[in-house]
Amino acid sequence: MTKNRRILLADWLAKGYKLFGKDARLWRFKCSNCGHIQSMNDFIELREKGITDVEPQTAYFSCIGRFDSRLPKVGQIGDNISPCNYTLGGLLCFAHTFVVDEEGKEHPVFEFAPEMDEIEVLEKAKKMYEGSVEKADQVASDLIEKRIEKLRNRCEVGK
Ligand SMILES: [Zn+2]
Image (tube, rainbow, N blue to C red; front, side, top):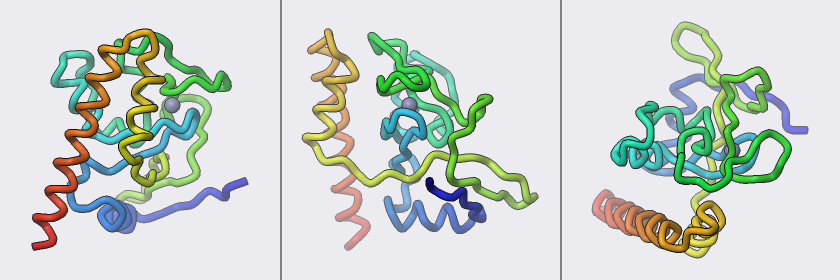
């Protein structure tokens, strides 16, 4: 079993920065229940489409399945469907990492997730939106555009 870890907010932010770069909207988090990988950008997209008004920061403690009403099926604890409706703010806390803020308060967070490549992204989108090829294609192409933009930004940062 993974041991629980406490990390200072500043160190946690530094870790995210090191893993994913300066734009926190692109940092990827893995749902502690179903393993779905998501970013604040995914939540921003839902807000822009009027699907939910939940804060983008939700990405590090609640699975997007709770909010994306376009999904044909949303997972629950123990059923292996992803994304799911899990939140670390509920009764069952599966967090391994607790971020300690300036006041010493502890906040459970999802783990940082390594990036997915385009093929994984496509397959994930197809699974998420099964039964709706159009939506899956749309989501996949949006994601890929985001990835390209991200790579472009990185190149610019490197200049
Ligand atoms: Zn989940």
